[in-house]
Length: 201
Image (cartoon, rainbow, N blue to C red):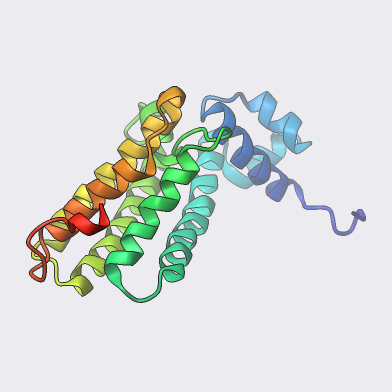
């Protein structure tokens, strides 16, 4: 990479923080971030106002990427809303079972950042609202009786699946169990079914 093409300090800080806060958590030290980024402390404060601002900006960047990945995952399943939701949980189960999985960065940030006024919390709340909207749209298209409530349930399932994958690596949540729970949530509120489809379990 030529000197002209090398990312500037702002981008290097974002890349370093995106990696280190995922592998080591948001408690990673400023010195470690600066060393990884090859940036001066002054750059951190000029571009982000400090570590808190950097963490919030990293989360903004990853929310855009992750929501795009959710949409792409659903699109691979075609147009059927039920299949699209099942594809999401199947992919998340595979991700959570990977040996390099470190959990959900949004849940980890919310748990680690105890100051309710930390700017990262606004970002994580926005992320969950957007994800809830994605699920609710599919459930509405499916004709679910309570799409918003079922989307709440799916968010709980996603958080639980990812938390289990990170905290209990010896008991990686199997895809079959996650899929059956999603089938129950989806099918129990869909007029065209009388409950989970036994043939799909």
